[in-house]
Length: 130
Image (cartoon, rainbow, N blue to C red):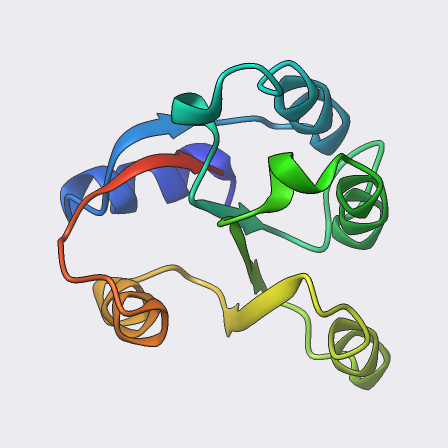
């Protein structure tokens, strides 16, 4: 399941108004850096997989945590992965930046769970990074 599958599920369920999709984590980090002066464009939620080319999901979180806090404020990371590795689960729990973890595939039920966990009263977020 790649980032464009996530985008389709998110669009179908009207979960976010604006969706930024990246197939590589390093490009997503660079895009976030460029949003330092654009608070309205910063994502509310980042959907993140563990297995990605160049940087894996954990490398992304490490880089993300080095970004200025104003870029990270009010943004939640949701990890979506097909991993069944106990080491991955243990590692996920060491990162406070990862708010939620779900097994693939992304579904309407998972999106509803995210809405409930984050107290989202509307079906649409302003921005989302996948």
